[in-house]
Image (cartoon, rainbow, N blue to C red; front, side, top):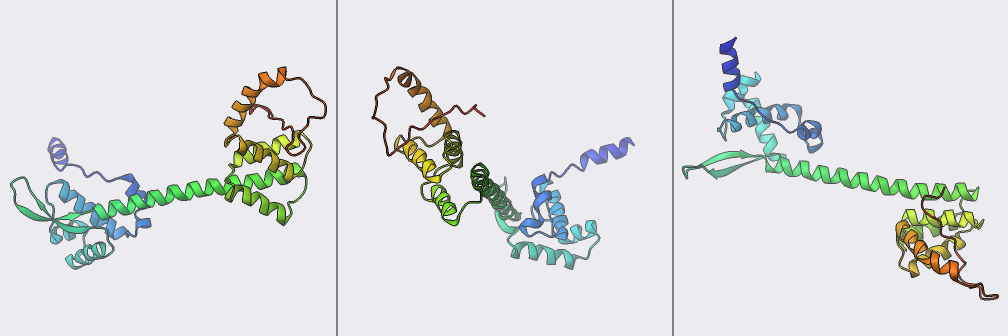
Length: 234
């Protein structure tokens, strides 16, 4: 047993990223190519930068022609290259290089992040349309849907801001996109682009509104006196 433990420790270990194990198929690597990669990493970690195909074939239980074929496939599929390196003694030698594989995994991670972000944006848009229909108590007309799309795509209003304008319109019992548009325009003129900025503006105006005298006939007919509630209101 002690002899086995000594040989077990001396054989060393090969570390493989779990991200590769999770996504090797998505970057175009087959299971057989993954096994070859394991063998290559094993030898390379032990200092052999260009392992012998015969030895790898013996460990895998394959003939060397199959190993050569898989190595060629990995190179042609841009999963690895053979490059020239200079060792510590200044001597040049060929070595397998897996930077292309790492780049593919990195690009896959970026694509996944973009897909998640795109899905989140899509969900936010759907939520805006659904909430407006729910609060209005009816389906939106094609023209209304176009108006909301314009808010999102051309005016670049954030979904949270549209939802906040909707809530204020409902509190005023004004079930109209025109009313919401006036609210959004008033915030845009004040450069308020987020719900938090709207809330801060409300808190800033509260002392002045409390002291402001009421003047008859001074109402602005173009932009409504828009109620701005706290974000914690339900």
